[in-house]
Length: 227
Ligand code: C5P
Image 1 (tube, rainbow, N blue to C red):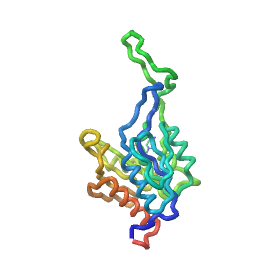
Image 2: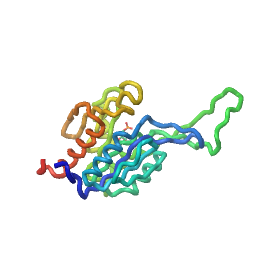
Image 3: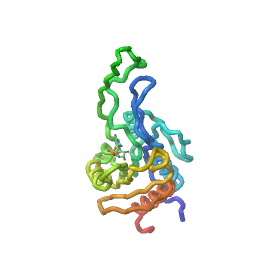
Image 4: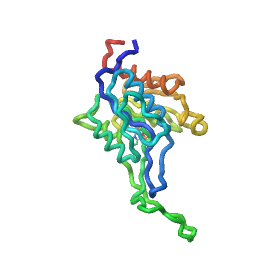
């Protein structure tokens, strides 16, 4: 049955966007509702896993039965993930900002009347998935990332699998309609799951169904004889 497929497994999941401050009242961010990552956390917990969900700012409730760590920035997310390890499974679903503003202002930036907008310098954020994927000692047995692409989906996802040292990449095409009506912000997702063994295309499913399917696939990976 559906019961306790991940009993005794420790899972760390990231979800949502990160917010990178410009000043105390402004930030840059990626578009992410957190719906898919949160659904995976809920499904893994329902399957008996011990789940730590590291969530960026989202407007979703904390999933039941999950330890949730709320963070804002990529650096905070990385630190929270590090603290949550060791784990058997890492699922990095967050839309982490690739850059943060270098030397964010301590006070609100004001228009100075010159008509010249402020100039911002950026610095690269840590890649949480790559850090875990390429870990030697203490690497989770299964490291899963996402690739949201607007072009060359499979080529980009394959490159990501290699570059980030992931075992599986869940790739989806986000070149769809406006936020909330397409895959970004919407309730449905259309996944192609890449591993070193090949590609598997899933039909368009509700994000909760994607989560259940992923949990079942993870369980089968650990205990193939149960299939
Ligand atoms: O390179 P890109 O951001 O498209 O890769 C997406 C995958 O990498 C996702 O699994 C995302 O959570 C992860 N990622 C990360 N840390 C970053 C950037 C991306 O964990 N700084």
